[in-house]
Image 1 (cartoon, rainbow, N blue to C red):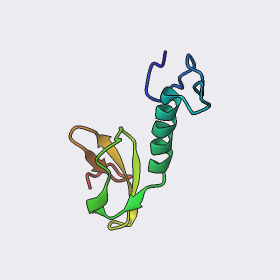
Image 2: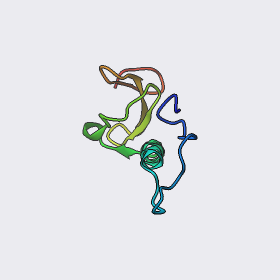
Image 3: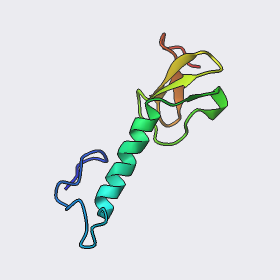
Length: 86
């Protein structure tokens, strides 16, 4: 059984009897895709992510012209490389 959302479902077959991807694997691939997509996300300050947040998540803020990271999730606190809240 998976212990966190990124552990793959080792106890489940990858496809069902019809040859379609099993639900547990589909969910896992969806989570991995969201993670990988977030690694290259960028945009204006107003469009910073509000979901799929974790401490250390990076976002390139085009308004500021620099990368920022999540320091706290609830509430979401973004900081620059110097640790300044932005």
